Length: 346
Length: 276
Image (cartoon, rainbow over the protein chains, first blue to last red):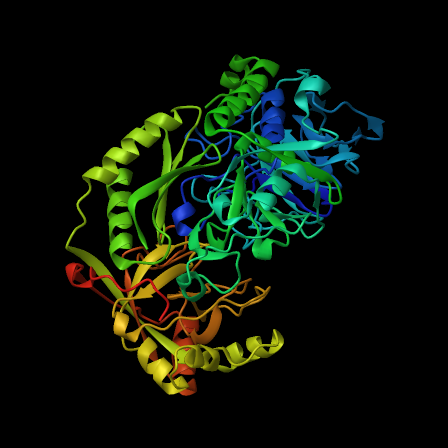
């Protein structure tokens, strides 16, 4: 229902993959529907906080869904604004320009009607985020505006944006000038340490392989997406006390199990030959041994790894994982005063 | 085997998994589904979703609202307290399948493996015709749903008619929409084209995932199949397949579904775990 007095944004150049995301749709895993939403949840929520929007909760939480913005990969979009609004750009490092003039990232920026934002390439990290005051107005699917790109559900017609698309924004005044300092606002470490809780099938791997998993540098492969991130490293091998009925019921490969639940962040090891780390659009169950599960706050870091870069895994207890999540959430809360979000007129 | 005591494990910081067995047992699955229903109805604070599957269930919890220990406590309490129903109301769908269809054969050829149905038949020491007779001769229990939106795991209720087969050694990056796949003891239907590793043994003419479902047989998400449903697959030939497909595409196909109480107790007997 487009009307002329609505706030709109025209996509001049979409870039390789730019899609509408809010904090996603937890609660439908049993129907095979992963939460989708941003791979770097921290950065999208930060962008929303900066412009005075509702950030929404971290992945797989009970809280109300946040406002919808854009997630882009490698190269940001070029957008033209039909009316005044406020935006913020976060995530991977970019050097955006408005009407040819460089503008800061991680700051609520006033944008005038008729102006053009050119985000350009991501120089460090991989994924960037743009929030717009009020958020993007696309239909809700199962309570969320997030795009599940894998089979095309939700978001803007279930697909990445194309040149010439027009986005509708909810009409809401934004907050201009709020900033988040780089050292706390970005999570783009030179060497990524991803914390994991070991299991559920770590016992299937021999001791040398369990040790190698935690010691090796794992290299991100280009065939990675929001469903799964593939890493190469040492060949992992399995213990030989596998029950014989596993061949019949699970599959003949030593990495096969009888299918079970795959969590967000789970690390499958098909044939022990590579790791597949499950992203925000992961399959909800499957039949390969999972050596460990990356903890939820670190999945934002995974979203910023460039193909060819390396990561290491570090084992923690579930209690430590929950404490780490609380630390990251506290960092987000501290960056922008909590009352900002309540300015939203409902 | 079914574990003496269920295994409780954290999967990262968002899930508590309760594992009841390391392979498929109908009785364990009935128990898992019953526990899932009980836990879901409790609407416990800080619980995002209860997910049940073939041989485990997961409590997805909000780590900012509750603690792992609390989730562990009330899950253990529910697991201890749940009685598995002996009977429950279940939908039975009759699903037309063109077994040994040309798309499955083309898929096998594309990935350099033999006719998948022949492979399954050989693995079970029967002819292709006997394999079809077995597969269409029993009701299947929907033991789990998921993998991708709309997909499911169906297990034969009559274990005398069981077929089993290994997965592809190298998973496919393509499977035609509506392909009937089977691996281990499970049958699935790929709702739309996508990757997969199950043996392709047939194709159904009907849709099991719809983006804007008109029928209330579907979930709001577009998925038709629910845990605790039953399926009966029946063989159709090329002409019948085309005729049904035409009705599906014209929007005039009516799902063949009945609802009745199913006696679970009769299926509680255990099969041997040891390889045959």
